[in-house]
Length: 317
Image (cartoon, rainbow, N blue to C red):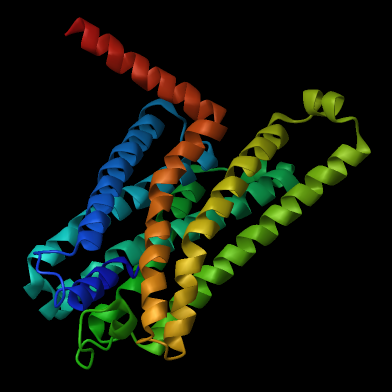
C-alpha cells in the first residue's frame, strides 16, 4: 500500500542530481506499474466473466473466487491510476485525493484478506463437518459471504476520510506519515490475525484429511466417499495455495505497518524496502488468476468453454 509514496520520495531524492522529467528508476517503476494494471484488470475481468457465465454460484468456492477477482480487478485499477499523481502533483495537496491514493489499494487488500479468511472457514466446515455443510449452503449465506468482506473493508478504510489521519501535520502525501499509529496498528493486527486464523483452519483441514487416510485405504475411500468431502479436499488444496501466495505477497508489506506504528516513519532504509515490498503485494492481483487456471479443474473447463464461444463467434463474424 506504500507503493506510490515511494515514487514521490524517489522523485524528490533524485531530481536534484538528474536533470530529467523523471528519474530512470522511476520511469521503470511506472512502466511496470502500468503493465500490472493492464494484466491484472484483463485477467481478473476474464475470471469474473467466466465465473458468472459458466460456473455455478451455488458452489461457495466459486463465490469466493468471484469476490477475489473483483477485489483484484479494482486493485489493478487503483494501481493504474497512480500515474496521475506523477503528472498532476496538486492531487497530493488535497486530503481526499491524497487518501484515495492509498486507500484504494488498501481497501481491496482488506477485502481480499477477509475473503481468504471466510474461504478457509468454508473449506474447514466442508471437510471437517460435511453433514453440517450440506445444510449450510444457501443463497442467503452466499450473499453474506459476498458482502461481508466489502463491509469490513469499508469499516476499516473509510475512517481516515473523517479525521483519522495526520494529513494536516504531514509534510508530504506519504503513506508512512499520513496515518496515525493507532490506524497502522488496527490494519496490521486485523490483516495478520485473519491470515493466522486462515492457516489454523487449513492446518485443521489437512489434519482431518490425514486422519481419514489413516482410517481407510485412500484409493478405495476416495472412490466411495461423499462427493462433498472429495470436493472439499480439492477445494482446500487450491485455497491453501491462494492463502500461501497472498501471505508471501502482502504480509511483508503489511509488516511495515508495525514499524510505522512504532515511529519508524522517516527511516530511509525502511522506506526504500517498502518500495519493493508493496510492489510484491500488488503482484498478488496478477498471480491469483494463474492459480485458478492451474489448480482448479472446473475453472479450466469454464475457461475452455469461454474461449471456444469467443472463437466460434469470431469465426461467424
